Image (cartoon, rainbow, N blue to C red):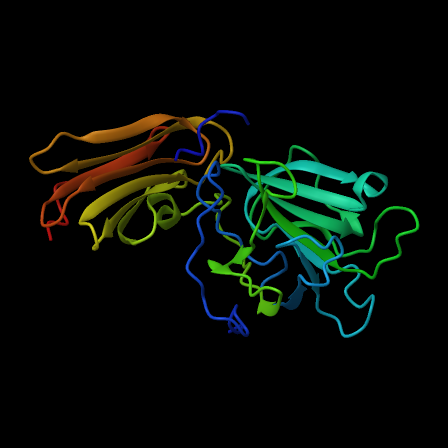
Length: 298
């Protein structure tokens, strides 16, 4: 499903107690799940609690790391993935979230960061994964005295609240509900919330990558289970703003297939059967382009 076109709008292991779980299907109307990381600076360990969540909804998580109430107040909260700020306001009287930041990641995915002590970003700002968006706090509605913590949610836009609250994934693994302690791998990275493996789908692995200067990258992937190749061009500049992007794949002896247009995050995926055949592949972001010879013939 295309999700980037202009339609409507030594640190320790991440998993402390749970084993990795195969990604569950996303909500039907949502695009590929962005590469979410823990919403805290790289290397910090935080305990997430769902069964005692302040709103008592499935899949919501309350995060703390201090040994006493109030120990986390003022700690940095980071964007779990790149995106655009669509809410930055105190909403205590409306819903009890207090200082709330909401990031739209494209493709029907949003993350919510509630009870913040301070909001560091304004509506309309484009943020990168790992960027500071606020600090841990205990803001809420009048008379609701809560201990400082980060209330975190992942939602999709395909249905109404609370059915649109999705399970949280960090570093590609599902959170170990009802509670789990994790070490953050939110160590910065591209402002593009998507990667080629997510876009092509399960079973694909990267075979080759070509840089388009600083504008983006083109990646060739292969799925050994079905013999398909896949090409994706990822933007590194003007991320979240529609601009010219293309990706193509040509299997020797067959016509070239191209995906091109004005896209916000990437072009592709272009998938074609290519087992034991040579391929040409490439793409562009703006005027920067890459075109391969026939290669990868295995």
